[in-house]
Length: 100
Image (cartoon, rainbow, N blue to C red):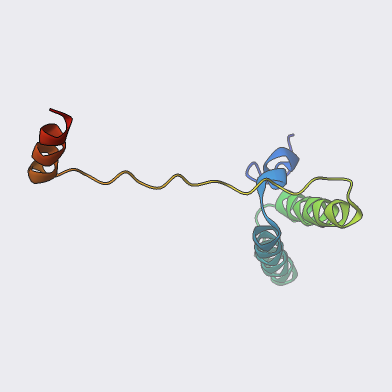
């Protein structure tokens, strides 16, 4: 995809939960507002960025709506494995005695 944000591809949007999608939408709308303001004052350097941000917003809205309609599945919750406790020398010695 030549136009648009590289970090907001539809495949990556599928992995975001709804809260993250809403946050990305807020950021994109804020960026669009700033770009429009720069365009009005003549300070905008890249007019292509306006188009890219608009497309990002449309992508996010599409993913949200498809999830509401049940077309696109919700991302699976990430299962985080608990960290293994570090064994101290005393604990290692106790477990070695128990195994003997």
